[in-house]
Length: 296
Length: 258
Image (cartoon, rainbow over all chains, first blue to last red):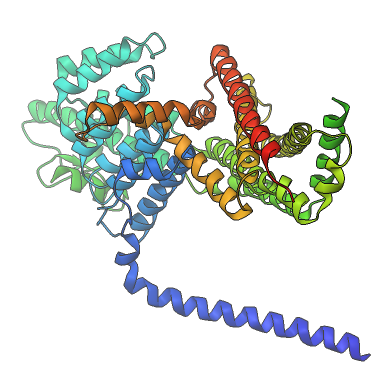
């Protein structure tokens, strides 16, 4: 090997070794930084108005950057099971002030804010504020009324306002016909499993984000289980009226012709009858934990 | 007219040879490529991110070129003493200025077109076929070009009577102030006497209103821009450029070049 080639080889190895050191060093810096994570969360500038002025004419780009920061912030906290989401609202506030037409920030931002912990920040009133601001800036976009109705329905449990939101949105000629049906159904029934199922199904079918779809899917499975349990309990009540004793196993209901076979939950696990003869998800079913939480 | 064409063609040729220019355009194209990745770490804004980052890159890189090359148009010729040889020929000073202005605007047009092509390419990688609404991006690019032409005129004016450093500062300062021109007319929460308010109102009309060329917010979300607005912005730019270049020609013709 001539002198020039060995020099080249030496430089190449030195550069590779240098990068290996940088990699190791960065790993230790990252480990140390975990302790400082709270400091890193601090937003240097909290005033949306000041941010708007500082962004000069590039507010759409800055809005998109702040929305990305909100997504990353929420994702990181979610992954670390950290429920301190104090910075979520300021980030969404700035993103939507910088770009009032950033529809995605209102829609998903409201979901992040309204969902109860550990899924979200558990701040439905902030979600309502965000969506109302979005509707003011984008009155022709009917989906924001749907989102507002969903927050009132699922999180605030304010069925009158939920019905009003669906009704207002349904006046938009572009709105889906079911908006009017939802408005009427919620006004008449308040909360019902069928309405909840229909609302979650639309979220599942229209969401493009994987996490939002997963969340909707989990809710759909849970609502489906609730509906199945309601039907099994009805059959168990009829069985009790006929035989004067409560069934202990679901197979008794099937044998009596009240059920067509062993009903399975959306995960494929058979339902069981609990101590008081009431139906519940199988202890092996992943749905059981969520179901018990909802019951509490 | 022939003199102006010759100066413009030479200015264009000289600017195209500048390596800094290529670096800046390459940087802008890199930003557009990066936008594809940035869009993927967010939710639902992949296309918005490409368009907003692309237009921002076109605008920001264009402003850098307009200010720095615009200021250098006259000062460089004076430093190299080529100006004296040129003015010894039958070329009037205003013809020289206008030629320089048109040459740089030509350069900016070519750069902006290249960057816009890069933006469309980045957009095409995430979405094809492109939609009719994507054509609105061209409107935003056109208005950015008008803005850049106005900045070049301002940079030329300042370079006619002050040092290059101060000319850069003045041009950048006027650009930033021009973005807030409309705010001077709608000052809230401050107790000012009517005289001061009138003065601020007057200044707001004197400053070049750069927000007239800003349609990024609409275009990013696929909304069109009314034709009237485009005509008004075009007329505004042409009128303002004419005023500034006239001022620059007056200052430059009276300048003692000895």
